[in-house]
Image (tube, rainbow, N blue to C red; front, side, top):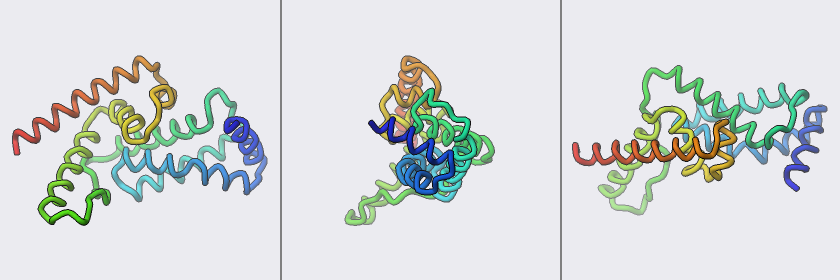
Length: 181
């Protein structure tokens, strides 16, 4: 039912209906922003990627053919934009830590938690791009493996391999960081 609704709204948006455009942006921007934020670890950059994703989508809508779900296609556009930005970066460290710490914790516990979050984020960013994207899509964004495979344009088996390598590398990096501290 949502797929049919999307097709109707996509057709209306392609024809210039502003209500259809707003509806699609409202429905899909949180997921796109979340993906970009996780991939880039920079909220401002993620917002830019989200905006650019929708700009590209609107330009392509008149010729868009529903070979995949609209959401899958949007995520692929966003992911490619994230890859482009990551390639341009000179540093691979996150710019800001997200507000994930429980402020009710004692100061030293809150610091420990922030350090763990920072170590995990740094380790995910240090992964090869496709492994980082696979892990972000499945573990952090909640996409099914089939959805993530479609977004990455790989088979489910290839995605499972990317996830296994990502988890193995992540585990090794985190254990190495724990023993060297």
